[in-house]
Figure 1 (spheres, rainbow, N blue to C red):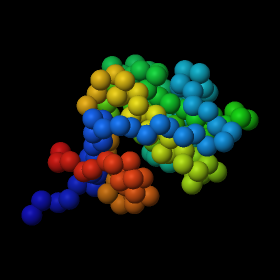
Figure 2 (tube, rainbow, N blue to C red):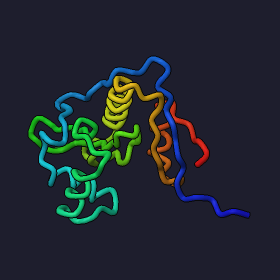
Figure 3 (cartoon, helix red, strand yellow):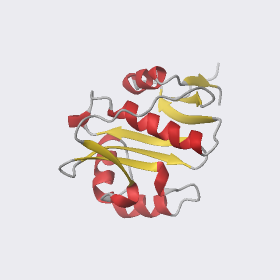
Figure 4 (spheres, one colour):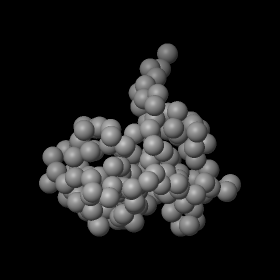
Length: 152
């Protein structure tokens, strides 16, 4: 019997009306090129195993699928980075992270809806991502967003 993969591939179809992002009070979205990339790297590193800043940043901005408009940073009024979603031009969401003090306020939902809206405007029919099968919090969020598992 084949061993189960540790990740599931999920898909959101963009052929139905999308929810408008609803941003929590006192935060606003900005593109990565308008934010402090070291602060973004710091919240990513707190959540994931990420390369050191110089390596991470160089590999990000030189990737053929990089577009700064698809890397959405949410910044609080005081400049603190509250969240980040990194997407590739192939309509793939690579990373989503919300800093602990900002969790439970709908920020992850707003970031995902913003990404869906951008991809729909670009003509994508769907958006994919991979999530750890044991990440129940993320899987619950993605289910609320209408994402469903697809075969690899």
